[in-house]
Length: 56
Image (cartoon, rainbow, N blue to C red):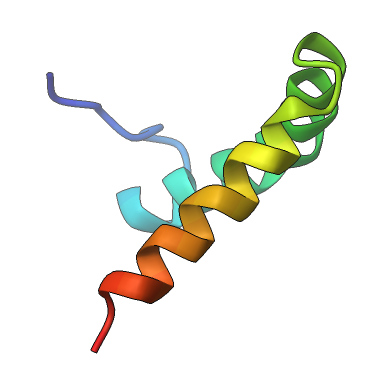
């Protein structure tokens, strides 16, 4: 799926996507914490632990 950046913006597509994610992230994290009753934090720690074990 191709995403077309806003044509009236002076920012590149990459910059527009970065801004979008920066704006969404705090709300997403709060919603994720609420909906999972904090279990997402455990998942994140576990994912980091697994990634660290597989990293050279």
